[in-house]
Length: 104
Figure 1 (cartoon, rainbow, N blue to C red):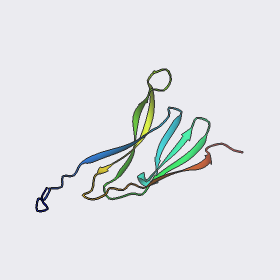
Figure 2 (figure 1 turned 135 degrees about the vertical axis):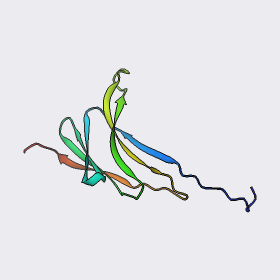
Figure 3 (figure 1 turned 30 degrees about the vertical axis):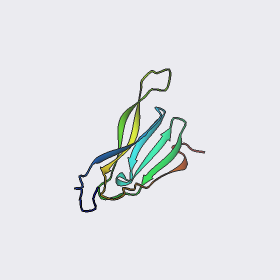
Figure 4 (figure 1 turned 90 degrees about the horizontal axis):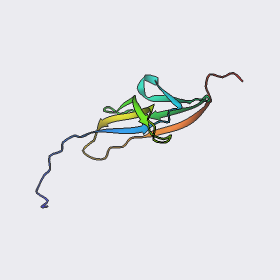
């Protein structure tokens, strides 16, 4: 294409999805900037992301098809936003936080 042709930018929505195993429970925390993940045996992880003006962190229902193809309810972490005219960068991290809710 000739250099003189300009393209109009049209914003597009996206959803980044992290599907969780049915034995993991997710809870939104810290004003919507992190999620606490707890496994059935009490081990916990924290999922965090760097908030940006247009990004929204949420927990939604999902379906797991692992055990012999039998559908099971589960959860998913979603980050929704709008693609930017240049690069869209999403920074996220997960860290182990130990046993949750059990006394030693």
